[in-house]
Length: 242
Image (cartoon, rainbow, N blue to C red; front, side, top):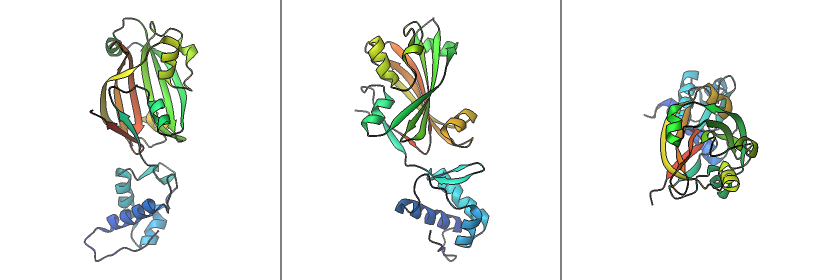
């Protein structure tokens, strides 16, 4: 890392330190996943105090270039991975990621009944609703924590036919003859809660990008309610309007 800071520059010292670290990241001198030196070492390297270093790291963190794990230090964030959203495309995030050349693996975390009246109305069912929580890894790093609600009456014995290791879209098409497409999507940001932090490997309060909505079949009938909770530094959603 360069240790040059200009004390006569109108640019604040913390921004100069942040810029120097950013240059090292951009050049590849510090790679994604690599741990940065500690605050004390950086302060000595740039001949500034630790508060200045802390401010520089906070700025880099807000921009998604690094992330801090409590008790372990700051790490260079992996580049954001884009996911295109289009109403006419198949509603398979896993398939889309694989088509773009990414390695995708999944782990089914939890399956249970859900008595939410709001979810039942969105699915247009009076029967029991099953809730599936899935952790998706892209290129071997946690990417999204996905929850999917499905009507049990329409997809009987799904628990036996889907263990979470392959695409739910593929299973519904193969086992039930149902092809899903997106009907509506809402995108918002939230602060990571304890469950997000545990599975996505981020601190509590870390920015989380949330995408939720309804998938329908080819006849327009609701099939699933979905919620994807992704790391704000690794997930980028692009909406196509054509």
